[in-house]
Image 1 (tube, rainbow, N blue to C red):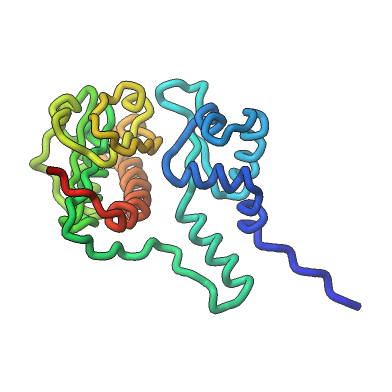
Image 2: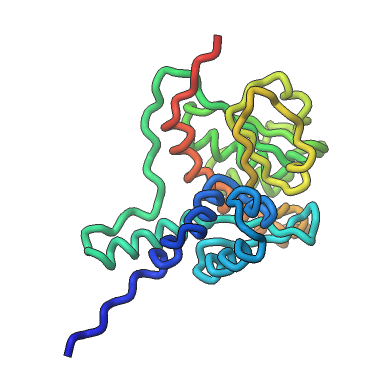
Amino acid sequence: MRPSDPAAPAFVQLAAHSLRWKLLTELAASDYRVRELVERVGQPQNLVSYHLRLLRDGGLVTARRSSFDARDSYYHLDLQQCAHSLADAGTALHPALGVASTPPRPPTPSPARRPAVLFACTGNSARSPIAEALLRHRAEGRVDVASAGSHPKPRIHSDAVQVLREQHGTDISGQRPRHLDTLLGRRFDYVISLCDKVREVCPDFGDHPRLVHWSIPDPTAASGPGPVGYPAFVRTAAEIDTRIRHLLPLLISTPQEVQP
């Protein structure tokens, strides 16, 4: 009796559908709300929502309520989970096809202008300075990076300083929050918002930077005195670091034009 044919791995079954693949590629670039995905893929909302649910059930996509409007949710592609799923799919086809689940180390850049990245949030006291510090640390001088806020706080949150020092070996104790308006004269290749609120009010920096949104909860909202709030900062820094590890190869592998 002939054995039954093995089923394709779950990732292959999910990604093989043309609309789901398009949703995956859109979410690989930025977090989006459903109505934005509807516009980008050109399909009805009920169909988009159905396939997003399948991707969520498959563990490839997550959703979070918007901190700007709780009636909205932002969808996020878990690139780390995608890497594991791709590795599993390769191994299922042939043991030698398993791939690494972490992004490759970016190549040494050409002598063209270094890419410039701005991280934006509301207070510039937690998420955006954490992102700035982690990208600067991982880029090792290959990327120009800054952060700012729409309503900057008086100082960087002490838990942000602590988590970067203890978990990631970088010190931002001498850094101070600054306003987005102070950077309006600078050129950026990427403007990355980490706060749902600031995404709605972020100024236009000109020169057509690539606008990316990372919908990341504010760790200060879950924080408290002493050790109570620190785990929220540990989780926030870990999520931002994962996203930065996947962003960095894109920054370094795309030469930037030298401006006159």
